[in-house]
Amino acid sequence: MNKIQQFNEMHTAKELLFLGNAWDLLSALTLEKAGFKAIGTTSWGIANSLGLADGELIDFDRHLGIIKTITENVKVPVSADIEAGYSEDINKIIDHVLKTADVGVAGINIEDSLKTSSGLREISQHCKLLENMRAALDHHGYTGFYINARTDTYFQRQNPFMETVERAMAYVESGASGIFVPGLIDHDEIRDIAMKISAPLNVLSLPGLTNCHKLKELGVRRFSFGNALSDKVIAYIEKNAQELVRLMDTSHLYENER
Image (cartoon, rainbow, N blue to C red; front, side, top):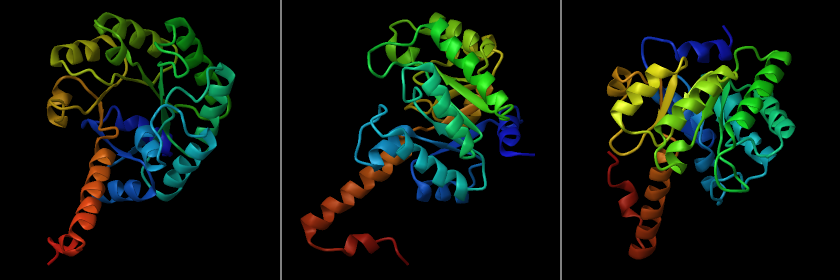
């Protein structure tokens, strides 16, 4: 069984797929060693590790190089967060998707947010992108490649539920393997969306939305924590660096050593 097949099966297994979000090779290896069955990159975490904000500010090839390094050095399947595809042009986005598949990932996250302007891509336009993306992946031998279609309705709309369902159903019909709805936290809405779409639902960890077992009961098939761990690590480094300067002493670095 190849990584793509393995990754697909994780979304229909008995247990919910709990994805470990990495931002560099060390974090990916650490997550794998801890027992995560699959790794998802976090564009936010990668950007921060390079001193940048999220939002496709990194050169795509530089971003892809980090994804490639992770994929080549872990044994578990990897899903790559490529934001909105690093272009507004459909052909360029598809080229980026194929290059990402070429480095050995089992799937991608692709979002419907616009980067050079505000708002979301029109449903028909995003469906066309997904259809062409699926056809290109199949043509190049990447049958079953996991397209996790992210919709940012809960970040950009006042009353997002109905539009989320509409977009999710349309994206699945257009070739998406799964649907990712970050910002969705209401349990009733999670349950309703999971029931209405014929594909695995992925939600993002947020305060009050943290427990894999509860999410499984609601119908969620995939759970990820995005940049939450990378933010925690950065905050830890900052706190300890400030202590070093303030105290002019390194003793606190060894407090928990035995």
